[in-house]
Image (cartoon, rainbow, N blue to C red; front, side, top):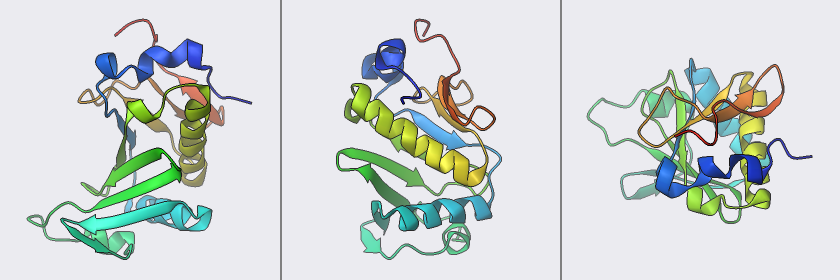
Length: 161
């Protein structure tokens, strides 16, 4: 059963309205939450690639990544929860797990279900909401995983942007 119906939320997946790379985040996170995400990626067997600049490296522990010097390049973890769906995690800070998705990869009910499943897995593992904001408009989530409802829900009117 789908958390969301494509026809009800397709406005949130319009790159022309939302920007092509909306911000997805878990607020009030910790190093332990980041590690839980890394563990989830490994346990689920999702294809991934960790890099620091141009160097591709094995995925380190979260505490190692998040303790890098301030002037160091921001590491990136690319995760494919499905063959053509990519989430790009950026280790900016330890108090918010954040990643981008490309709305062009999330068109239609099947891809929406993959995306909702991905948010659900992360939210359940952390026991925290996972929120999607329009690109560059953090703090105004349009949808996200609701811990109490145990599903992805609409948080804004899809017709208003």
